Length: 96
Image (cartoon, rainbow, N blue to C red):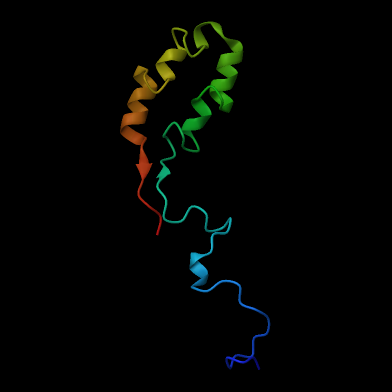
């Protein structure tokens, strides 16, 4: 037994509750996260120029480019992308 009466051996480097320790599994707890259709969300980001769908449109170019007649409608400022962003985008409430 140790000097403080527990059967656990070794030095205790940190005090406090284990829930205070940040790990990859607990990294996002208590933080606001973007909703899935937000431009930063898991689905919405696919339509940005860095995403799979938006990136392909950028490579094709022409009217599908983010500044083209069709592509500009899908940006967060465009009629389609702006409607999705305002209706389904934003931040979700904190987890936990």
